[in-house]
Amino acid sequence: MFTQYALSYGFDLLEPYIDELTMLTHYTKHHAGYTTNLNAAIEKDPSLNKKTIEQILGNLDAIADEKLRTTIRNNGGGFYNHNLYFSTMSPTGSRSPSGALEAQIRKDFGSFDALKDSLGKAAIGRFGSGWAFLSLTKDGKLVVNSYPNQDNPLMDKKGDTPILGIDVWEHAYYLKYKNLRGDYVSAFWNVLDWDSVGAIFDKSR
Image (cartoon, rainbow, N blue to C red):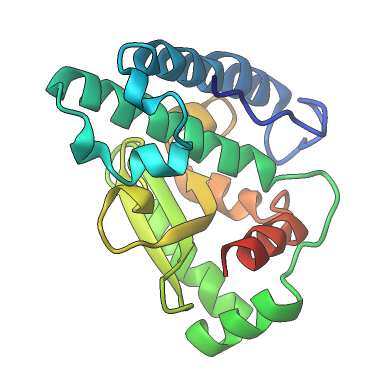
């Protein structure tokens, strides 16, 4: 059974950048719903019981039942994406990368500001609901990619591993920022914990 990432901070502690009601609703309603629906879907296919979420999302074509595959794609993606999202935010922690991650960012993007610009544009430019990701390719390069709905890089065949995701579904920001997605993306950098992102980067290499 899959479980939500356990928050290490209170729902109100990302204020004023992400408001308490948004965090509460996002985590206890949306993320919890994806988790519950994923576990219910997994029960319908015993072959999936012992697989990791990464293994499942990386091989969706192996699920013969088309309806079940779609359910797992949507809810499994929602579960994975939100675990990543919530685990890389914090009221404390570094607001800039360091160590091996910083070096890789400079190598692949030229500067930290250039990465923020690229990732921000991918998030703001995503039409409708979706995500922007910073991912690590199989050959160790950092890339920015954007996906609709709850899709993510694990679902295509390139083998990229997400290390950071920005949720641009309206439920992630609309209560506070209304239609000003760009303001939410700008605020996001103030709660992103680069220590956590760096740990995921190190583990993924």
